[in-house]
Length: 67
Image 1: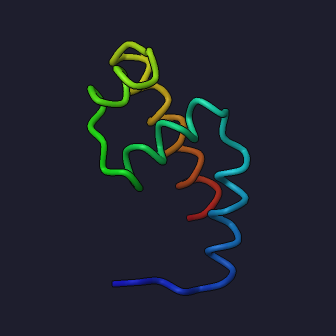
Image 2 (image 1 turned 60 degrees about the horizontal axis):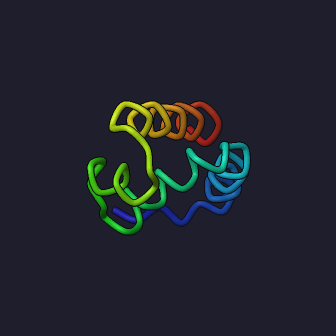
């Protein structure tokens, strides 16, 4: 189901702007580009644990701010 609620989209955009550059990159690579955490780690020169931490930061921020 697609949600086109303008207020929710605005909250999501605001939440994305709050992310660190690394967390935003990891989130976009995973959710938009469909990359695995291992692929992201290799591409970005991070450990798998760093990718997981950045993704956790992104998801927590988006859920807390955008609902």
